[in-house]
Length: 402
Image (tube, helix red, strand yellow):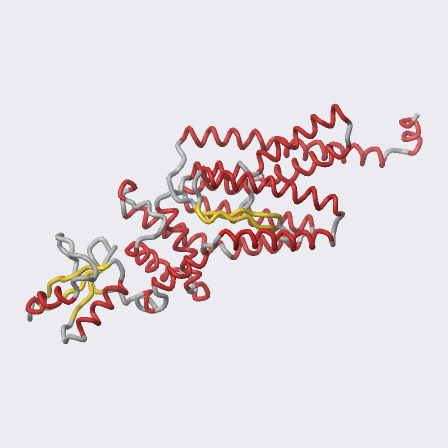
Protein backbone atom coordinates (compact mmCIF):
# COMPACT_ATOMS: atom_id res chain seq x y z
CA UNK A 1 0.00 0.00 0.00
CA UNK A 2 1.44 3.37 -1.04
CA UNK A 3 2.46 5.79 1.72
CA UNK A 4 0.35 8.95 2.07
CA UNK A 5 1.97 12.26 2.90
CA UNK A 6 0.55 15.75 3.58
CA UNK A 7 0.81 18.23 0.70
CA UNK A 8 -1.10 21.29 2.00
CA UNK A 9 -2.82 22.41 5.21
CA UNK A 10 -5.94 24.56 5.57
CA UNK A 11 -7.58 26.58 8.38
CA UNK A 12 -11.02 25.08 7.73
CA UNK A 13 -12.52 21.81 6.59
CA UNK A 14 -14.32 23.58 3.76
CA UNK A 15 -11.07 24.78 2.17
CA UNK A 16 -9.49 21.35 2.55
CA UNK A 17 -12.54 19.72 0.96
CA UNK A 18 -12.44 22.19 -1.96
CA UNK A 19 -8.76 21.38 -2.53
CA UNK A 20 -9.52 17.66 -2.39
CA UNK A 21 -12.20 18.10 -5.06
CA UNK A 22 -9.67 19.96 -7.21
CA UNK A 23 -7.30 16.99 -6.98
CA UNK A 24 -10.12 14.52 -7.69
CA UNK A 25 -10.67 16.34 -11.00
CA UNK A 26 -7.07 15.40 -11.85
CA UNK A 27 -7.64 11.77 -10.77
CA UNK A 28 -5.64 12.21 -7.56
CA UNK A 29 -7.33 10.81 -4.46
CA UNK A 30 -6.82 12.71 -1.23
CA UNK A 31 -7.65 12.19 2.43
CA UNK A 32 -8.38 14.96 4.94
CA UNK A 33 -7.07 14.65 8.50
CA UNK A 34 -7.13 16.91 11.54
CA UNK A 35 -3.75 18.18 12.71
CA UNK A 36 -2.81 17.11 16.25
CA UNK A 37 -3.87 20.41 17.85
CA UNK A 38 -7.27 20.10 16.17
CA UNK A 39 -7.05 23.67 14.88
CA UNK A 40 -6.54 23.03 11.14
CA UNK A 41 -6.73 20.33 8.47
CA UNK A 42 -4.19 18.70 6.19
CA UNK A 43 -4.71 17.02 2.83
CA UNK A 44 -2.83 13.75 2.26
CA UNK A 45 -2.16 12.04 -1.09
CA UNK A 46 -0.17 9.02 -2.19
CA UNK A 47 3.57 9.72 -2.18
CA UNK A 48 3.94 9.23 -5.95
CA UNK A 49 1.38 12.01 -6.58
CA UNK A 50 2.66 14.43 -3.92
CA UNK A 51 4.74 16.65 -6.22
CA UNK A 52 1.97 17.01 -8.78
CA UNK A 53 -0.61 17.68 -6.06
CA UNK A 54 1.62 20.27 -4.39
CA UNK A 55 2.01 22.04 -7.73
CA UNK A 56 -1.74 22.09 -8.34
CA UNK A 57 -2.42 23.48 -4.85
CA UNK A 58 0.51 25.90 -4.73
CA UNK A 59 -1.77 28.92 -4.27
CA UNK A 60 -4.08 27.23 -1.74
CA UNK A 61 -3.63 26.80 2.01
CA UNK A 62 -0.15 26.68 3.52
CA UNK A 63 2.77 24.31 4.04
CA UNK A 64 1.96 21.42 6.40
CA UNK A 65 3.54 21.73 9.88
CA UNK A 66 6.82 19.94 10.43
CA UNK A 67 5.54 18.19 13.55
CA UNK A 68 4.10 14.72 13.29
CA UNK A 69 0.44 14.68 12.33
CA UNK A 70 -2.12 12.58 14.09
CA UNK A 71 -3.74 10.67 11.23
CA UNK A 72 -7.27 11.12 12.47
CA UNK A 73 -10.10 11.26 9.87
CA UNK A 74 -12.49 14.18 10.03
CA UNK A 75 -15.04 13.32 12.76
CA UNK A 76 -18.30 11.76 11.59
CA UNK A 77 -19.59 10.43 14.89
CA UNK A 78 -21.84 13.41 15.62
CA UNK A 79 -25.56 12.98 14.83
CA UNK A 80 -25.28 15.04 11.67
CA UNK A 81 -21.67 14.39 10.69
CA UNK A 82 -19.17 17.22 10.61
CA UNK A 83 -20.89 20.53 11.44
CA UNK A 84 -20.01 22.19 8.14
CA UNK A 85 -22.22 19.66 6.34
CA UNK A 86 -25.13 21.57 7.94
CA UNK A 87 -23.92 25.13 8.43
CA UNK A 88 -20.87 26.39 6.57
CA UNK A 89 -18.26 28.66 8.11
CA UNK A 90 -18.84 31.00 5.17
CA UNK A 91 -22.55 31.31 6.00
CA UNK A 92 -21.74 31.95 9.66
CA UNK A 93 -19.17 34.59 8.69
CA UNK A 94 -21.76 36.30 6.47
CA UNK A 95 -24.26 36.30 9.35
CA UNK A 96 -21.65 38.03 11.52
CA UNK A 97 -21.10 40.69 8.87
CA UNK A 98 -24.84 41.36 8.58
CA UNK A 99 -24.95 42.32 12.27
CA UNK A 100 -22.62 45.25 11.61
CA UNK A 101 -24.39 48.49 10.77
CA UNK A 102 -23.32 51.78 9.27
CA UNK A 103 -23.75 55.19 10.90
CA UNK A 104 -26.95 56.04 8.99
CA UNK A 105 -28.53 52.73 9.96
CA UNK A 106 -27.65 53.30 13.63
CA UNK A 107 -29.14 56.80 13.61
CA UNK A 108 -32.33 55.54 11.94
CA UNK A 109 -32.63 52.76 14.53
CA UNK A 110 -32.27 55.29 17.36
CA UNK A 111 -34.80 57.75 15.91
CA UNK A 112 -37.41 55.14 14.94
CA UNK A 113 -37.14 53.28 18.25
CA UNK A 114 -37.39 56.60 20.14
CA UNK A 115 -40.55 57.56 18.22
CA UNK A 116 -42.15 54.17 18.94
CA UNK A 117 -41.11 54.44 22.60
CA UNK A 118 -42.57 57.96 22.85
CA UNK A 119 -45.79 56.92 21.11
CA UNK A 120 -46.29 54.04 23.53
CA UNK A 121 -45.44 56.32 26.47
CA UNK A 122 -48.01 58.97 25.51
CA UNK A 123 -50.73 56.32 25.68
CA UNK A 124 -50.00 55.60 29.33
CA UNK A 125 -48.62 58.82 30.83
CA UNK A 126 -48.35 62.61 30.64
CA UNK A 127 -46.07 64.35 28.11
CA UNK A 128 -44.00 65.89 30.95
CA UNK A 129 -43.35 62.53 32.61
CA UNK A 130 -42.49 61.03 29.23
CA UNK A 131 -40.05 63.87 28.49
CA UNK A 132 -38.37 63.40 31.87
CA UNK A 133 -38.17 59.64 31.34
CA UNK A 134 -36.57 60.02 27.90
CA UNK A 135 -34.07 62.52 29.36
CA UNK A 136 -33.13 60.12 32.18
CA UNK A 137 -32.74 57.19 29.78
CA UNK A 138 -30.72 59.24 27.28
CA UNK A 139 -28.25 60.35 29.95
CA UNK A 140 -28.06 56.80 31.32
CA UNK A 141 -27.35 55.21 27.94
CA UNK A 142 -25.00 58.02 26.90
CA UNK A 143 -22.87 57.06 29.90
CA UNK A 144 -22.62 53.49 28.58
CA UNK A 145 -21.97 54.83 25.06
CA UNK A 146 -19.09 57.05 26.23
CA UNK A 147 -17.56 54.15 28.17
CA UNK A 148 -17.71 51.90 25.11
CA UNK A 149 -16.10 54.58 22.97
CA UNK A 150 -13.32 55.14 25.53
CA UNK A 151 -12.51 51.42 25.53
CA UNK A 152 -12.71 51.25 21.72
CA UNK A 153 -15.81 49.07 21.40
CA UNK A 154 -16.96 48.39 17.85
CA UNK A 155 -20.46 48.69 16.33
CA UNK A 156 -21.74 50.81 19.24
CA UNK A 157 -25.47 51.53 18.88
CA UNK A 158 -28.19 53.08 21.07
CA UNK A 159 -31.89 52.23 20.81
CA UNK A 160 -35.15 52.42 22.81
CA UNK A 161 -37.31 49.44 23.74
CA UNK A 162 -41.00 50.13 24.52
CA UNK A 163 -41.93 48.62 27.87
CA UNK A 164 -38.31 48.18 28.96
CA UNK A 165 -36.39 51.44 28.47
CA UNK A 166 -33.29 51.90 26.34
CA UNK A 167 -30.04 50.08 25.65
CA UNK A 168 -26.61 50.48 24.10
CA UNK A 169 -24.92 47.57 22.37
CA UNK A 170 -21.31 47.19 21.29
CA UNK A 171 -18.53 44.68 20.85
CA UNK A 172 -15.23 44.93 22.70
CA UNK A 173 -12.15 44.95 20.47
CA UNK A 174 -10.05 43.51 23.31
CA UNK A 175 -12.44 41.90 25.84
CA UNK A 176 -11.67 42.93 29.42
CA UNK A 177 -13.78 42.18 32.49
CA UNK A 178 -12.59 45.43 34.10
CA UNK A 179 -13.71 47.45 31.08
CA UNK A 180 -17.08 45.65 31.06
CA UNK A 181 -17.58 46.44 34.75
CA UNK A 182 -16.70 50.12 34.26
CA UNK A 183 -19.04 50.41 31.25
CA UNK A 184 -21.87 48.90 33.31
CA UNK A 185 -21.32 51.52 36.06
CA UNK A 186 -21.05 54.48 33.67
CA UNK A 187 -24.78 54.22 32.92
CA UNK A 188 -26.36 54.55 36.38
CA UNK A 189 -23.62 56.45 38.27
CA UNK A 190 -23.98 59.80 36.39
CA UNK A 191 -27.77 59.60 36.80
CA UNK A 192 -27.47 59.04 40.55
CA UNK A 193 -25.10 62.01 40.86
CA UNK A 194 -27.56 64.19 38.90
CA UNK A 195 -30.37 63.00 41.19
CA UNK A 196 -28.37 63.97 44.28
CA UNK A 197 -27.60 67.38 42.72
CA UNK A 198 -31.34 67.91 42.08
CA UNK A 199 -32.11 67.16 45.74
CA UNK A 200 -29.52 69.71 46.85
CA UNK A 201 -31.04 72.22 44.42
CA UNK A 202 -34.52 71.54 45.83
CA UNK A 203 -33.33 72.16 49.41
CA UNK A 204 -32.28 75.68 48.45
CA UNK A 205 -34.98 76.56 45.88
CA UNK A 206 -38.01 74.49 46.97
CA UNK A 207 -38.84 73.91 43.27
CA UNK A 208 -41.05 70.81 43.04
CA UNK A 209 -39.82 70.01 39.53
CA UNK A 210 -36.35 69.40 40.97
CA UNK A 211 -37.77 66.94 43.49
CA UNK A 212 -39.67 65.05 40.76
CA UNK A 213 -36.57 65.00 38.57
CA UNK A 214 -34.41 63.75 41.44
CA UNK A 215 -36.93 61.02 42.20
CA UNK A 216 -36.89 59.74 38.61
CA UNK A 217 -33.10 59.91 38.23
CA UNK A 218 -32.48 58.11 41.54
CA UNK A 219 -35.14 55.43 41.18
CA UNK A 220 -34.35 54.41 37.59
CA UNK A 221 -30.57 54.47 37.94
CA UNK A 222 -30.41 52.90 41.40
CA UNK A 223 -32.86 50.19 40.32
CA UNK A 224 -30.51 49.40 37.44
CA UNK A 225 -27.74 48.74 39.95
CA UNK A 226 -29.66 45.91 41.62
CA UNK A 227 -27.73 42.60 41.34
CA UNK A 228 -30.17 41.20 38.77
CA UNK A 229 -29.14 40.17 35.25
CA UNK A 230 -29.53 41.78 32.68
CA UNK A 231 -29.66 45.01 34.71
CA UNK A 232 -26.40 46.93 35.01
CA UNK A 233 -25.81 45.57 38.50
CA UNK A 234 -26.12 42.01 37.23
CA UNK A 235 -23.75 42.71 34.33
CA UNK A 236 -21.28 44.28 36.77
CA UNK A 237 -21.25 41.21 39.02
CA UNK A 238 -20.97 38.90 36.01
CA UNK A 239 -17.87 40.80 34.85
CA UNK A 240 -16.01 41.02 38.17
CA UNK A 241 -17.07 37.74 39.78
CA UNK A 242 -18.99 35.17 37.75
CA UNK A 243 -17.20 35.29 34.38
CA UNK A 244 -14.46 33.09 35.89
CA UNK A 245 -16.82 30.34 37.02
CA UNK A 246 -19.43 28.99 34.53
CA UNK A 247 -21.44 27.09 37.15
CA UNK A 248 -21.66 30.13 39.42
CA UNK A 249 -22.65 32.27 36.43
CA UNK A 250 -25.47 29.91 35.46
CA UNK A 251 -26.70 29.73 39.07
CA UNK A 252 -26.60 33.52 39.36
CA UNK A 253 -28.59 34.01 36.14
CA UNK A 254 -31.17 31.41 37.21
CA UNK A 255 -31.71 33.16 40.55
CA UNK A 256 -31.98 36.58 38.88
CA UNK A 257 -34.41 35.25 36.25
CA UNK A 258 -36.65 33.99 39.06
CA UNK A 259 -36.26 37.36 40.82
CA UNK A 260 -37.42 39.18 37.67
CA UNK A 261 -40.39 36.82 37.49
CA UNK A 262 -41.27 37.61 41.12
CA UNK A 263 -41.00 41.38 40.50
CA UNK A 264 -43.14 41.01 37.36
CA UNK A 265 -45.82 39.22 39.40
CA UNK A 266 -45.74 41.82 42.19
CA UNK A 267 -45.86 44.76 39.78
CA UNK A 268 -48.20 43.00 37.32
CA UNK A 269 -45.72 43.88 34.55
CA UNK A 270 -46.14 41.94 31.30
CA UNK A 271 -42.83 43.32 29.97
CA UNK A 272 -40.87 42.02 32.97
CA UNK A 273 -42.74 38.73 32.72
CA UNK A 274 -41.58 38.34 29.11
CA UNK A 275 -38.02 39.21 30.17
CA UNK A 276 -38.12 36.58 32.93
CA UNK A 277 -39.36 33.95 30.47
CA UNK A 278 -36.65 34.78 27.92
CA UNK A 279 -33.99 34.69 30.66
CA UNK A 280 -35.05 31.23 31.82
CA UNK A 281 -35.37 29.81 28.29
CA UNK A 282 -31.91 31.12 27.33
CA UNK A 283 -30.18 29.44 30.29
CA UNK A 284 -29.47 26.31 28.22
CA UNK A 285 -27.52 28.33 25.66
CA UNK A 286 -25.78 30.27 28.44
CA UNK A 287 -24.63 26.94 29.88
CA UNK A 288 -23.46 25.62 26.50
CA UNK A 289 -21.55 28.78 25.65
CA UNK A 290 -19.91 28.92 29.08
CA UNK A 291 -18.82 25.27 28.91
CA UNK A 292 -17.41 25.50 25.36
CA UNK A 293 -15.58 28.73 26.26
CA UNK A 294 -13.99 27.16 29.31
CA UNK A 295 -13.01 24.03 27.34
CA UNK A 296 -11.39 25.93 24.46
CA UNK A 297 -9.70 28.48 26.72
CA UNK A 298 -8.02 25.60 28.57
CA UNK A 299 -6.63 24.16 25.32
CA UNK A 300 -4.32 27.09 24.61
CA UNK A 301 -2.18 29.06 27.10
CA UNK A 302 -3.54 32.61 27.57
CA UNK A 303 -0.36 34.18 26.16
CA UNK A 304 -0.81 32.27 22.89
CA UNK A 305 -4.45 33.09 22.24
CA UNK A 306 -4.88 35.44 19.28
CA UNK A 307 -6.52 38.76 20.05
CA UNK A 308 -7.97 39.43 16.61
CA UNK A 309 -11.45 40.91 16.65
CA UNK A 310 -12.30 38.75 13.64
CA UNK A 311 -12.32 35.06 14.49
CA UNK A 312 -9.53 33.29 12.54
CA UNK A 313 -10.78 30.48 10.30
CA UNK A 314 -9.15 27.70 12.31
CA UNK A 315 -10.71 28.98 15.55
CA UNK A 316 -14.12 29.47 13.93
CA UNK A 317 -13.97 25.89 12.69
CA UNK A 318 -13.06 24.64 16.17
CA UNK A 319 -15.84 26.63 17.85
CA UNK A 320 -18.50 25.55 15.35
CA UNK A 321 -17.57 21.90 15.75
CA UNK A 322 -18.15 22.09 19.52
CA UNK A 323 -21.33 24.16 19.16
CA UNK A 324 -22.82 21.69 16.68
CA UNK A 325 -22.73 19.04 19.39
CA UNK A 326 -24.55 21.23 21.92
CA UNK A 327 -26.97 23.66 20.29
CA UNK A 328 -30.59 22.53 19.85
CA UNK A 329 -31.87 22.11 16.29
CA UNK A 330 -33.89 25.35 16.33
CA UNK A 331 -30.70 27.35 16.93
CA UNK A 332 -28.58 25.63 14.26
CA UNK A 333 -28.80 28.44 11.76
CA UNK A 334 -26.02 30.74 10.53
CA UNK A 335 -27.39 33.50 12.75
CA UNK A 336 -27.61 31.24 15.81
CA UNK A 337 -24.10 29.90 15.27
CA UNK A 338 -22.75 33.42 14.62
CA UNK A 339 -24.08 34.87 17.87
CA UNK A 340 -22.84 31.98 20.01
CA UNK A 341 -19.46 31.77 18.24
CA UNK A 342 -18.73 35.48 18.71
CA UNK A 343 -19.61 35.25 22.41
CA UNK A 344 -17.34 32.23 22.84
CA UNK A 345 -14.48 33.93 20.97
CA UNK A 346 -14.75 36.98 23.26
CA UNK A 347 -14.78 34.79 26.36
CA UNK A 348 -11.80 32.70 25.23
CA UNK A 349 -9.47 35.69 25.49
CA UNK A 350 -11.34 37.73 28.11
CA UNK A 351 -8.93 39.36 30.56
CA UNK A 352 -10.27 38.86 34.09
CA UNK A 353 -10.20 41.54 36.79
CA UNK A 354 -7.31 41.59 39.22
CA UNK A 355 -8.11 41.24 42.93
CA UNK A 356 -7.37 44.95 43.48
CA UNK A 357 -9.60 46.06 40.59
CA UNK A 358 -12.40 43.75 41.77
CA UNK A 359 -12.25 45.17 45.31
CA UNK A 360 -12.14 48.80 44.15
CA UNK A 361 -14.94 48.48 41.61
CA UNK A 362 -17.13 46.53 44.06
CA UNK A 363 -16.70 49.30 46.65
CA UNK A 364 -17.84 51.91 44.10
CA UNK A 365 -20.78 49.69 43.14
CA UNK A 366 -21.95 49.33 46.75
CA UNK A 367 -21.49 53.07 47.38
CA UNK A 368 -23.87 53.99 44.56
CA UNK A 369 -26.31 51.16 45.33
CA UNK A 370 -26.83 52.63 48.82
CA UNK A 371 -29.21 55.45 47.70
CA UNK A 372 -31.68 52.92 46.31
CA UNK A 373 -31.54 50.86 49.50
CA UNK A 374 -32.08 54.06 51.51
CA UNK A 375 -35.04 55.14 49.37
CA UNK A 376 -36.68 51.73 49.80
CA UNK A 377 -36.14 51.85 53.57
CA UNK A 378 -37.58 55.39 53.88
CA UNK A 379 -40.60 54.48 51.73
CA UNK A 380 -41.19 51.39 53.87
CA UNK A 381 -41.02 53.45 57.09
CA UNK A 382 -43.33 56.14 55.66
CA UNK A 383 -45.86 53.53 54.51
CA UNK A 384 -45.76 51.85 57.92
CA UNK A 385 -46.31 55.16 59.73
CA UNK A 386 -49.21 56.03 57.41
CA UNK A 387 -50.78 52.62 58.01
CA UNK A 388 -50.49 53.04 61.79
CA UNK A 389 -52.04 56.49 61.53
CA UNK A 390 -54.96 55.20 59.44
CA UNK A 391 -55.61 52.36 61.87
CA UNK A 392 -55.52 54.57 64.99
CA UNK A 393 -58.86 55.30 66.83
CA UNK A 394 -60.76 58.38 65.63
CA UNK A 395 -60.26 60.15 68.97
CA UNK A 396 -56.54 59.60 68.83
CA UNK A 397 -56.41 60.94 65.23
CA UNK A 398 -58.34 64.05 66.33
CA UNK A 399 -55.88 64.58 69.19
CA UNK A 400 -52.96 64.22 66.76
CA UNK A 401 -54.50 66.85 64.48
CA UNK A 402 -54.77 69.46 67.27
